[in-house]
Length: 428
Image 1 (cartoon, rainbow, N blue to C red):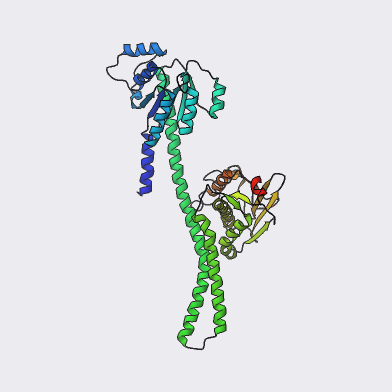
Image 2 (cartoon, rainbow, N blue to C red):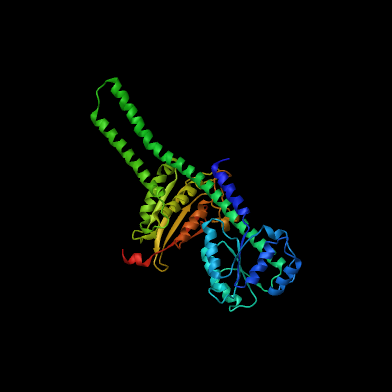
C-alpha cells in the first residue's frame, strides 16, 4: 500500500473516531445535565438524574450506554465556546456538533455565537436550543444563510442523544466523502498529467527527430570525407534552428502550468492565450488532419483573469475536441474545431464559442455534463473531471459555460460568457 493510500486511510479513521461535541449555555445546571447524559457514571443515581431533569424540564433521563462514547466539552459563555472551538481546530480535533443556548445575556448571545462558530468552522453542525428567544426562526435563518437545527426546551435526554448521533454521523459521512473525492480528483489529475505529458512528448519529438536526422546525415558526410556544401549545410542548420524555436515555443506555453497562482489575476489577452494553446496542439492537429479555425474579434477587451486557469480551460476544451474527433465511432470525414470570440457590449462580456463536428454528447448526459466524473469516453480513457474543472474555474471568475448541440449539425458546442471588468476597460 502506498504512503498516499495510508494517509487517506488514516484520515478516514481519524474522522470515524471523532465524537467531539460542544455544549454552550450560561446556566450551569443545564451544562451539568448535558454532562450527566453524555458521561454517565456508576455513582450517579436515578434520583440525581431526576432532580436535574426537574431543573431543566426534561422527563426521560435514563442513562444511555451509547451516550458515553461522545466526548462532551462545555462552555458557560459564547466567548468561551468560540475559544474552545478555535483551540480544537488548532489541535486538528474539531467539534462535530455544537448545541448553543440562544439567550445568554452576559456577553455574546446565541445568534452571535453561532455566527462566530460558522465563520470559524463552516463544517460544524449547529443546534440552537432555547425555551424562548429574542429572534424568530426566520430571523435566525436570514442571519445564518443556511439551515441550523432548532430545538426547544425542555429537552429529553433521548432527544439530545438522537440529535447528536444523527448530526455526528452526518458530519462524518460528509467529511469522509470529501477525503474520498479529493483522492479521486488527485488520481484523475495524475492521469490527466500523464495524458498531457504524452501529448507534449509527441509535440517535441517531431522537431527533435528532424534535428537528429539532419545531424546524423551531416555526421555521415563528415566521415565520408567528401566535399562539404556549405550553402546546403547552412540551409539545414537554419531549418534546425527553426525547430529549436518550435521547441522553445512549446516550453514557453507550458510555463503557465508550472506556476499556477490561482489568486493572481491580470489583464489577459485572449488572443495570446489562444495562441499558446494552438502551439501546444499544432502537431497533434496536423497528425490527425484536424482543421483548426480561429475567428477572434480584433478589438477584444482584455480579460481580468488568472492566466493559468484560462489556459487550462482552453487546453481541456481543445483536448476534449481532439479526442471526440478521433474516437473510433466518429464518422467525421473532415474534422474541424472552430474557436470564435466576440465582445457583447450589451451584456458587457466576452463570449467564447468552442465547437467541433464530432459525435457530440449523448442527450442522456447533456444535463449532467458539468458534474464531476461524468464522461462519454471508454473506461480508463477519461476521468470525467475536465468539464467539471472548467466549470469551477470559470465560476471563480464570475463566468459561466453552457453546452448545446450544434444546430442542424453533428458535434458539440460550448459557449463561455466572461464578464468584463469595467475598471480594467477604463485603463486600457
